[in-house]
Length: 355
Ligand SMILES: [Zn+2]
Image (cartoon, rainbow, N blue to C red):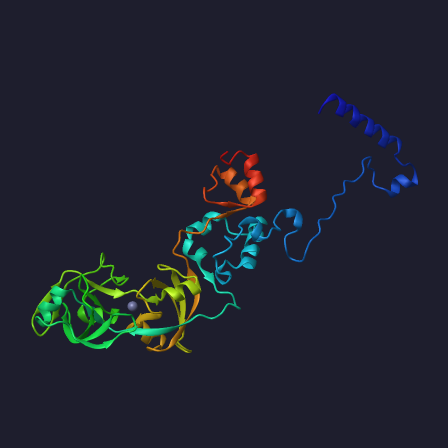
């Protein structure tokens, strides 16, 4: 306090003492010589945080949408995120690192109740084998595979030929060959098939054989082929035509939650991999185990209920409250964070922002 301020304070006290009421009045009022400080009651709006909390910002102020080129149907649910932002700003939301710890969850977006329903056709993939040209020759002799019927995916066909598969524990007969020939032989079976054979293949996307296993023998009319690798349980996936991918705002590599079947066996299948590009026709591919579990068959429809982008995880939203906490913990603000305006001010005042 400066001398001038001390003088002013002494003056105020003197004035207050002079104006002090006496007698009966003094008994009626509390003995005070300074006016009771009055803070105006902040306006409250229902259950929302009051406006002075700095929390009442629309998400659009914080994270403007990229604008053109983004389908409005597939933008983040603004109202929901705004609520989350307000809760976070009021100190009630989850801290940012918590959402960083569970990126999958934070990326899942439920489709809005009024969003158009996306139904897709279901196709059940029974156990089958794709053969390399060399393996096809070894199993069936010189002749090329003959087309029994064409499949939904353009260019693919079920061949007339079948093979038997011999595993360490048991055999499977009449495994359909699916053409055309591939660069590497791949046996796609369900987990119950794997149990019959006595092998434990990984669940993997068709075509990615890095983790696949061998240990089985393909047996054809002209010969046998021992597989050192190529056995997988195909991961559930949605083939998506380029047109549908564009229309629905989905991309190759995205993961979906898809509701399948009807009561009492209806279920939502998670982590349905989107495979999109030229040469894909829109169809949900499940294996025979999955189809039986949820009671669907080829030609049924399933409904996309949520999706996760394949792009890197969402940027964390940092509120002023988070900034204060990060300072206390001696932590830094994540480089990719989105800061609310008040958080930016506070961080800047604390020297936490790079110039
Ligand atoms: Zn498929």
